[in-house]
Amino acid sequence: MTSGSGQIYLDDNPVNMYRKIRAFDSWPKAYFVTKRNDRDMRVVVTEAHLSDGTLILDRVIPEGKKEMSYEDFMRGQK
Image 1 (spheres, rainbow, N blue to C red):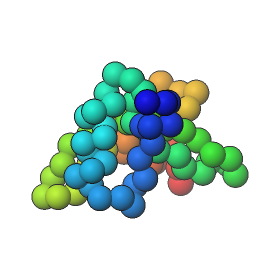
Image 2 (cartoon, rainbow, N blue to C red; image 1 turned 60 degrees about the vertical axis):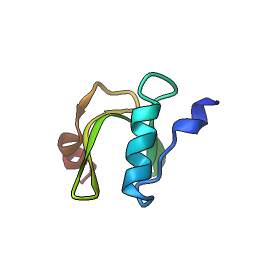
Image 3 (cartoon, helix red, strand yellow; image 1 turned 180 degrees about the vertical axis):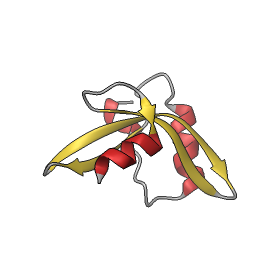
Image 4 (cartoon, rainbow, N blue to C red; image 1 turned 90 degrees about the vertical axis):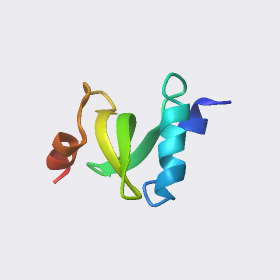
């Protein structure tokens, strides 16, 4: 297993993503990559849950930042 093993893609199957988040909760951590200010940013997922077959991200750690709610992270993306 490598640190890249924890990468998830937000357009993937929600159940598979949730399983990966749970499986990699200690190492290497599940994360996704997003664009911010024209560069790739790694965002670690620390808490998530499934609701009616939809993956809900609850808490994340954006690269270089402290843990925050996913809602706060998305508010800063706009």
